[in-house]
Structure formats: C-alpha cells, structure tokens
Image (tube, rainbow, N blue to C red; front, side, top):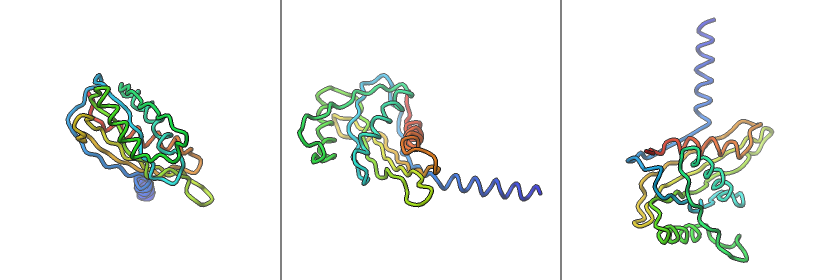
Length: 172
C-alpha cells in the first residue's frame, strides 16, 4: 500500500515537471530603482498580437517585483499589422537611448495557443532579455514554456510563465 502511494506521487511529480520547461542565464543584481523600459515583444507565434498581450501581462508581473518600466509609445501608423515586430523593437531601443534608460526588457513570444483536441489546453512559450540600451549588451536572458490544464485560460498560463521568468531576475 505504501509503495503504491510512493509510486503514484513519483508519477504525478514527473507529469507536473513535464508540463513546464525553463532556462535562464543568471547575472549580476540589477537595481529596481534604475530607469527601466519595456520594448515590444517579437511575435513568432501564429496568434495575432500575442506580443502585445504578453507585454501587458509582463507589465503587471514586473510591477509585482517593484520594477515600473516606461512603456515604449506605440508608433502612429495606419496599418499596424504590416509593421514588422523586429522593426518596432529596434525603434524602441532607439527611444530608450534617447530617454537615457538604464535597462530595457524585451523578448519574444514563441508559442501562444490552445492545443488541438478535446481538452484544448493552453500552451505558452516566451523568451525575455534585459538589455543596456546604450551598448545593446544583453545583461540577462531567460526562456520558458508551459502547457496548462484544459480549463485554464491562455492568459493565466502566460502569467504563470512570466512570473517564473521574472522571478529569476536578480534584483536589488
């Protein structure tokens, strides 16, 4: 009886660990009180505006950690769907240099979808980097992916991934 419980717990632990994947690069501590900015997240997923959705969640997650970044002002353009995300990211870094920001959080969304099938569980994959705008040097980077449960929302799964990623950021 005891061995069945232990085996069951081991299987559950393996299953839960298999639903998430995270990698990170640790670096020196970054000051919360520095001038921070948030540049666009490049959308590599097939979901329209996944980068913008992730940015909004990221803003609140960063605020939970005491970081209050300035958001890159959206460019005035007639057809935003035709503007390349990497171009927006490049323009945001130029803006950050003009604003004399110490650090900029940016990154990409690799996956943002509900998986096919009866359960339709959410799947999220996000990479983040902290850059020094003046030099373009990456001072911290991390990535993570998660497949949520069938009744979980996509935004909820993304929030869990972003909390895990930002939680690895070494802040002082």
